[in-house]
Length: 422
Image 1 (cartoon, rainbow, N blue to C red):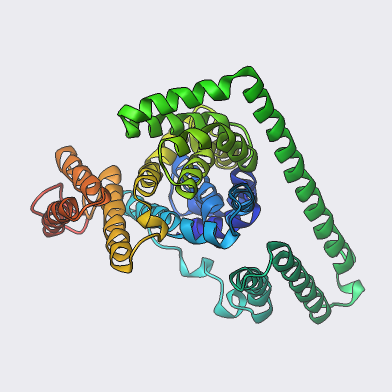
Image 2 (image 1 turned 90 degrees about the horizontal axis):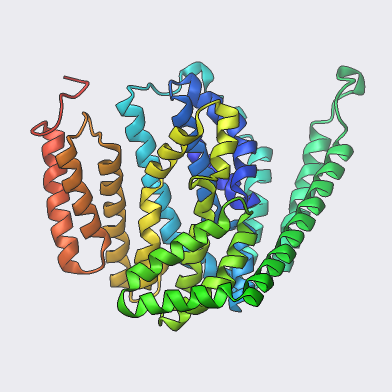
């Protein structure tokens, strides 16, 4: 669970699933392996959590800023709209990790591996972690420009770095091989400039791809196909859009994948009568999911390089862990209430039932609750989860009743196998 939360925070900053796996996976995957997780499962957890960070507010990586520019809206609107769907995803992922741990009879982290509170909650370290991000989000909420908010966050981060370097200064002879704080600061600024140039080149290359698609007529052909299918079956049209977004995102960085997919898939979704922001979030989500979708699954390959696991089984675990995310975008694109658009009672009802639906769906996919769950019971739970996820109070009531009854019977031991405790 710590690996999931840490990868979510890191992923929202760097905006690249592969880079996130490479940076946080070297710490989290070996720790999960030491606690008993298999190589494939440890790699898949890291890959999925790193991918989800790209659409987790308040930062969402560079893709959210690009979306705000393309749609001509504020970045804050994009972040607010993505809050509930991304939260649903991480609720499902955290629950899946907990269920997998129980299914494999894994134990909590030993006490000798847990750092002391003084180390974990060091004031300067906490300030350096939270204050720049808090400054960025606060200024954006206060309606300052994104450029101004980012500049202030950078200045705060540099100032905190200098303060830490002064307070932790040690005599040179104590560690002759230590790198000077000035060199570290210069290196950080250099890497930041390189990353900015990298993102700029990605967006420029994406525009070339978009121009080629338009010149060859491929974009027009795809638009005609999607609109033609959508007139008779909107779900089929959305499935085709999902497939094309994932295909365009395979092996490409998320900003480039979204830029290309938005240029090709955005107009036909608009002609089907769907709202612009939900449509672009739909495209952005599946462009992100390309990082864990076979056969390319670049984030899975990066995780396997660390875990030494097999790619196909790791990708299979990743798909299982992220199954709820494949369904949630269909819900908010057809009913934007999950994007916090609508009356307060409707939003509360949609959020609560969606959380219950995601939890029930995760329970059905993992197939464990105190004991293994039979296949037939898992199918019933899956149907109840779909009923909870589909908008409408009738389906919500049916799903809640069925899911509650089945889970109660599982907890009482009336169905399923014998629990470990027994």
